[in-house]
Image 1 (cartoon, rainbow, N blue to C red):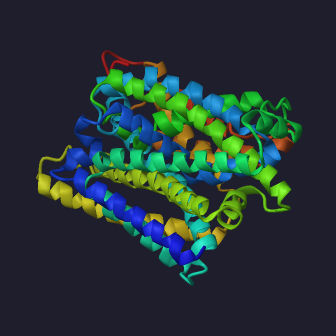
Image 2: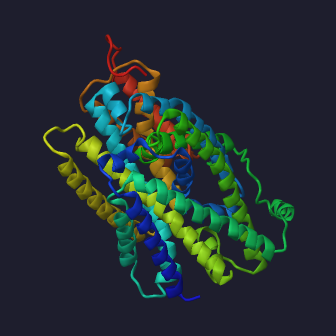
Image 3: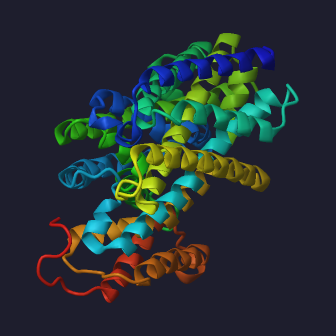
Length: 489
């Protein structure tokens, strides 16, 4: 199948998104952009969040991990599942009770402006790095398997895709993304299911036969009992739980969609439903990974890792499956980038610039500022994607988890310190310095962990370690509460 023909489906898909964006952004305003006028349907939000959470990393990388780690990634998924309940029953009630537009306003009410700005700053850094790493992975797949054959340079591909995202998000924001994410999740899951069914039929395997074959090859192994390994099951489960609390519950992008739901009850239903479906979907991706390795062995294909799925889908499967793969891939690309771009714009405008607090500007000026910030972040995304291309690291999923460990640790500490204690931090630069120093200390701990801890390798639990160090340092600079201060948590 020609690259031009495949690329035409990317264009048609984008035009569909643009049509949805035009329809949903009519009569929109700043509240539509930031929180969808608090009128989003919880079922749409729940379904659309699947696409945002999975992204291109899950679509491409998770199946590729099966060859080396079996179903070991499911240990992390079990941790995710626990974490979503913490978000639903601890954090969401807090956000709704305080009627927050930006979740970092909680830090302002609890500790003051320094903690508030620090929390927002760490979210911005983390989301820029995480979102652009995911974006790079998918753009790179499109580039290698389609656009290189059309002699289109990587920079132009990245520029055009970001322009597409900018066009359908700059007006409607969250109000638009709730609908586009639902559409994109549908296409992505359709691609997943079709690929699983086709490969099973091609290998003449029933579901039972598939499980048996995967078990024989050792691909279905989940639990890792090696205490010193980075994949030790307790580390993976606990780490996965705190990754979810940090990357979902303390993340403006994910919570922006949740708090756009009408009320707390529906928002909780959204989170619990989403967590159950996400477990099932991740199992399907692992099943697909096992099938891809069985297919590769049957056809003498030596490709492994991130390149396995795109190589087989675009070179060894029928044209219709290749088309479905491309649609599924770009459906995994857009939700992780459009939501991040919108959330970063919202956080910077509300938390850093304070446009909702300012009385010296009108609604029209707020809109102009929002649009300018949106364009600037699109430019930052472009530069970050080009840097990832220059680095050319193949382990994007490892980069994302590392970034989360370093940047969400201070956020986890700030929120947990506010919720679990009654102590006050006060104003001053000490909070910011601690939140910077802790990730730096964790960097050295991570790098020399095998030497310091007699062979023990720090893995996904890096976020928890970072959070604990930050929490203890915050305790040292804090003071007992005097009278009624902050918010009642």
